[in-house]
Length: 235
Picture (tube, rainbow, N blue to C red):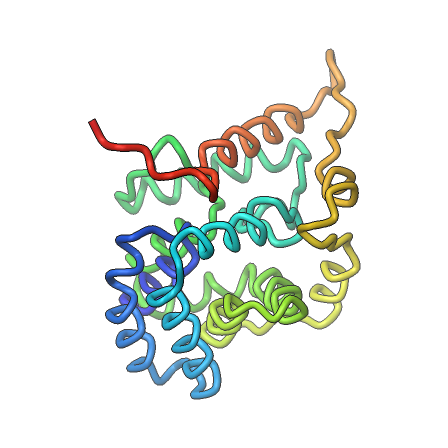
């Protein structure tokens, strides 16, 4: 189970040459986990093959279009729960405290609710606890899987696997509520701008943390390498 969650976390990270190199190992780990239904394991195998054999720049561009440019496919869990409300800031603090208590060190470039990081944390927990915790955002996984299915994306299999591994299954009404939110195509720039439009900023008493949360999310996204740029040489 721990290796499975690590493998799923790796598949959901920004594609790099290192990820391509270990893709066959990730595939072997996932194929050996019988907690994942055979159909989903087969689809995961196809995604692993795409990542292992695909052109790296094409893979990176696809990833950015899906997960960085499309708000409805954000891999930041609290985006689908709190949006940019002030509650998101406290939820971030609470989740980071869990990571700290478990001895998981974060880098400065990610937020606590980033799904690959969340899975990395769960990979350190006992199986029962990990499966129960996966059940809490299972409705988010199901909604993301459906949106990815509509786009014929192989990443759907990763989200389907997370639903299969979770103890509590997603409630239909919760999934439906998420699917009613705007879901623009990544090539529709006007719709994307509308989806990411900043909420009004309020100052003084009663002001929330939405401005701060939104800024943090945008800064994190800006740190992602552009898909058409060569990797920066290391010093």
